[in-house]
Image (cartoon, rainbow, N blue to C red; front, side, top):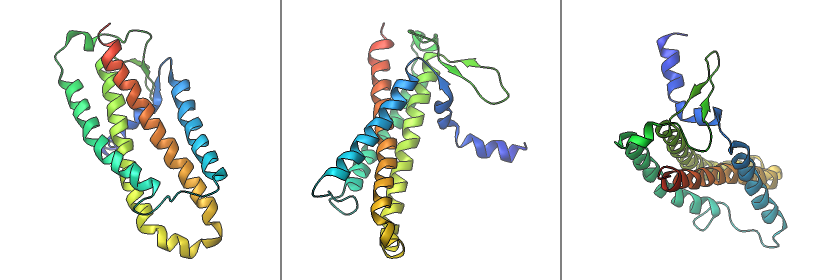
Length: 186
């Protein structure tokens, strides 16, 4: 692969978080899918459906929340990356964190690297949610016109996707905060 190809893939480096191997990985991934499923089930069985698009819609609320979270994630990433605390460069307590890439050996991460992956990944998810919601709101009139018959299925599918991404971001955020407040000090 040439230098331009490598540079292109560097833009996706925050998503290497998904390749990390750690003890609680399955639990957190399943929890986000379950949250997404529960929200969709609740939406399906509600007699009066809440608005998803529009000024009072669910997507607007998520977009507003993500607008606040993105700077927090970037600030947390910068803070962790520049902390001069000795324990941050040690191996994580409570189990190893491994990064496996294709055609490379497994790399054991330090606490600092692990926390940077957490907040870099969450910042990327919040940016994707923000831009995705802008695009979906802009395209909604066209989708309503072109795919009117499939609209209920598109709503449910979109709701499921957004809630999985959003709940995964929130769960990983709480885990990162727990790690910073409890694990680093012990």
